[in-house]
Image (cartoon, rainbow, N blue to C red; front, side):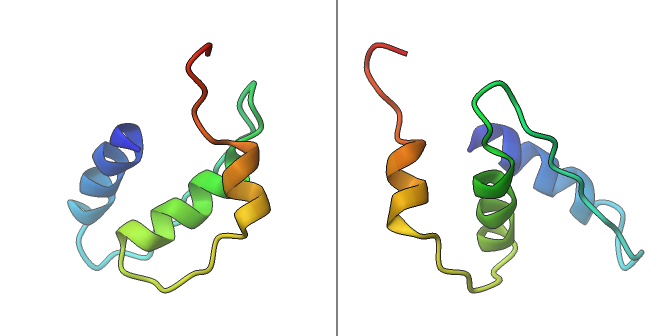
Length: 62
């Protein structure tokens, strides 16, 4: 989530310019989750499915 917070600050620095963010799938295929989390960081109400959260929950052994 720290990486997303840094990206958010860069986007905010662009001001009112129309901006698009592309989330490419990582090795762990987190693109959809990251996109939804970014929306939350910008205050956009979204509902992240529990199944998606569980699928990407941090595990001690990773």
